[in-house]
Length: 191
Image (cartoon, rainbow, N blue to C red; front, side):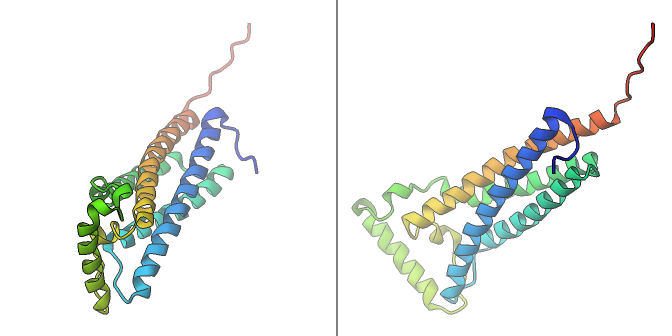
């Protein structure tokens, strides 16, 4: 399963695709777990988490298909560059939407006595939401519910940022591979 020999650039492309797939699978697992918890409490899941799960599921499928096409040496590099760019845009949106309220949240202070009043308010808000069947869980309330939830959402946010970098890098590798494949081979001159 070595695939085509595109040198260091090709090896870098394969490594980046593997890292993308691993990061996407981690995000899928955490987001799906949160959605499952919300549904178990008879609440509609947060749009932020549903959107994150949708984008990452499409992206992991894309990574698997392009990796197979690359191994078989039939990946259209120019189209791949465009698709990587589109997924980069989608992941930037995910990172911004997920991270906006998280950037102001300090997971260390959740549950400490210095914020007991705000934690109490949050608890009341969540109880109110959970007591209504089919009520929508507000993303901003959900992320502050516990330290574990906060840290897991920050992990999703961090992986989303890392994926932005990885997809930008794979797009650059892909365009370089396309240029290399379109380069006219030099003719050797016999003396």
